[in-house]
Amino acid sequence: MDHFPRIPMYTGLNAVQVATQLISAAMVIYALKNAGRTSTSALLLRPWFIVLVIAGAIERLAGLALGVSMERDWVVLLAGTNRPVALAQANAMLNRLDLLCETVGASVFGLLLTKYDIVTCLKISSALMICSFPILVMLGQLINSVSCHALDSSRTPSDESICADLLDVRKIVQNGLSSIKHGWNEYKQQTVLPASVATVFLNFNVALAPGAIMTALLMHRGMFHFPSSNLSISEKCLQISNSCLTGISPSIVGAFSGLCSVMGLVATFISSSLVKRVGILKVGSIPFSHVYTICHN
Image 1: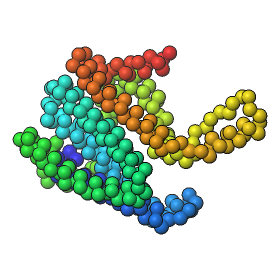
Image 2 (image 1 turned 90 degrees about the vertical axis):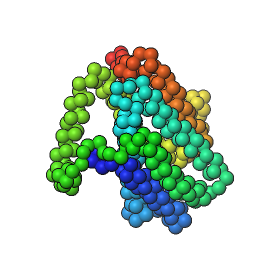
Image 3 (image 1 turned 135 degrees about the vertical axis):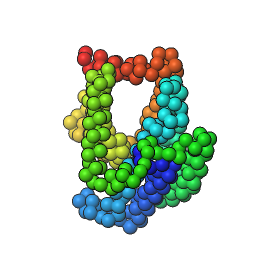
Image 4 (image 1 turned 120 degrees about the horizontal axis):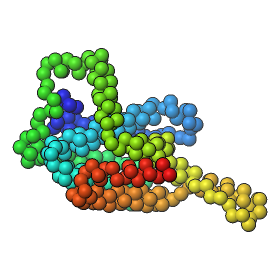
């Protein structure tokens, strides 16, 4: 991404993301209409499931690349590297819009599910994806024109030797390893390294239990509730079996997801105001220092 112009790369990543989302929706619709009840091992070998997994992985990679380019490149270029308050406000606005879209999108999709079947809702979502693509392209061009075409160039100057290196597998591996080494060296020099490592270990369970898997488990299997102590043994066994077989209502899961988005939305307003008062470095070290104190105690 560093060696290609920003606007064409932005357009290409949006096209890839929309295309993979449409493929994923088509595979889910096909599975709902044609696939019956099968075992897990048989499901993993179905062609539509393999295509669904690959399309989902590519879509996540494209979304990650777009997020990195927006938050770490476009914002810095447009706001200025020596303006920490402007950078904080721009990042807060991006996160604010992202969380707002997640909250509104989940609410609208949940409302559609209460009125229509899943296939119809997926078709509506696919139509919205197709309609949003030209809007995204036009907004990117508008940002470029307002910023006096500052996004036309790439991060690094491109020439024939660089383009040849991009197609060399050995060079790709060498550049990747050197970038990882440079990133770790920069990370080790930070003053909040111990607190950051403590935060990573505290949140390590998030990587072991992804949110989508936990949501599906809670909706289909439910939460385990400990039976009351004044019940008989048969009544306790019956209550345990009912709690394991009864799933949580999707509205409850959606309510908690919306609450998390609201908390993140509030945090964007608080962080931008704190940056103005105490500075960006102190704001970044405040949560890490509290986590480090908790772990130490």
